[in-house]
Each structure stands twice: as C-alpha cells, then as structure tokens.
Image 1: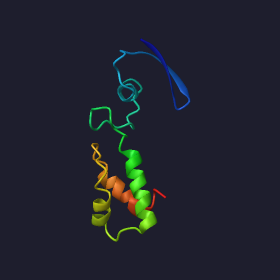
Image 2 (image 1 turned 135 degrees about the horizontal axis):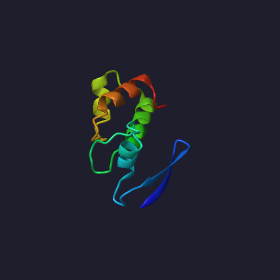
Image 3 (image 1 turned 90 degrees about the horizontal axis):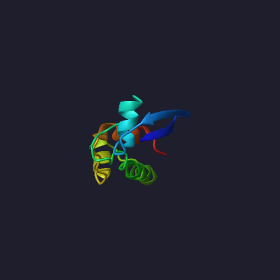
Image 4 (image 1 turned 45 degrees about the vertical axis):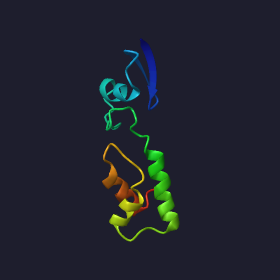
Length: 97
C-alpha cells in the first residue's frame, strides 16, 4: 500500500506491506535506528511513562542514597529493552524533574 509518512518535518512516500509496523518502517526503510526494538512485540516505549512517573516521585520524596536503592524503587517498571542502567543514571543526574 502507498503511504505518506511525515518524520522530523520531512514527508516520505513509501510502498509498504499493511502488516509493517511503524517501528520497522522507521528502522529498516528510513534507517532511523535511534528507535529501539527490544521486545519484538510492539510494546517498546510502553514502559517509558511508568519510568518517568516513578523517577519524578523519587525526586519528590527525596532521592535514595545509592544506585541500589534507585533500582529497588524503580523495580516495579518492567523494561524489555534493557535500559535500566540508563534509567538509574538519569534518575541520579536528575534528568527527570
């Protein structure tokens, strides 16, 4: 099927199989590999709002003293792509306020 897709202000005209996911189109057809594929179930990015909400709550309550405590407090958010080290680093640096 013919598709017109606007990404970063640029329109791309593509012929796609109707079963093609947006993620695969971005990565494979447009070569925008910054979009990550982790679980291969189309759920990547689903955990992001939960991670952000939990991180903001940690800052409001008072940041835990150690990375271990941050990991424990964030453990209710399951991330299939393995971004946990970056999440802990972002929480520690305060990049979620």
